[in-house]
Image 1 (tube, one colour):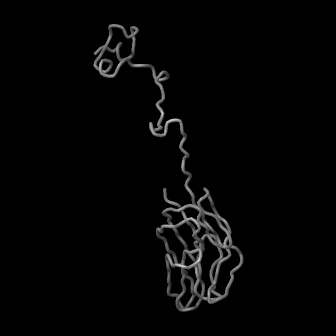
Image 2 (cartoon, one colour; image 1 turned 90 degrees about the vertical axis):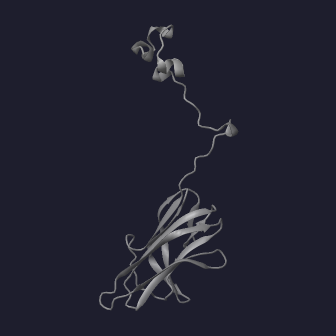
Image 3 (cartoon, rainbow, N blue to C red; image 1 turned 90 degrees about the horizontal axis):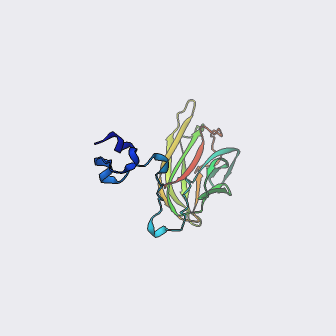
Length: 184
């Protein structure tokens, strides 16, 4: 093939090479039209780009103990998107979908076994994930981590509870936390 044809030299008349013959004249890069990524069915409509939604909570300075449970007063650490929010000390779900949920609590309680439950529900409570940890007698410091996927519905509430009153635990953001991320 002719090098001139590949560059589009000579005005494109009478000068061809295999690539030009197969694909039409070669145009300079700046003149190539940009093709729309829209499908014919969505012609004229702009599709909304889905935003990744997640929320990560860190502990506040106060614990609440009642009814044989300890509850952490959560504060917002990170948040993106509209699918999740922090209200009434729990994570509220605003969009149905598959979610990745993770949590960790660092216990410093000398009680034999410590742990926490991540549960779902607006009206009835369903345990999603449970973590239990044997505590050492000397220097009782153990973290309990759990993670998994769950299908959540609009209106669901996700909360972390410790099934023991007056639990001793760390209120540092790097050792006690909960988060939920909507999977795309």
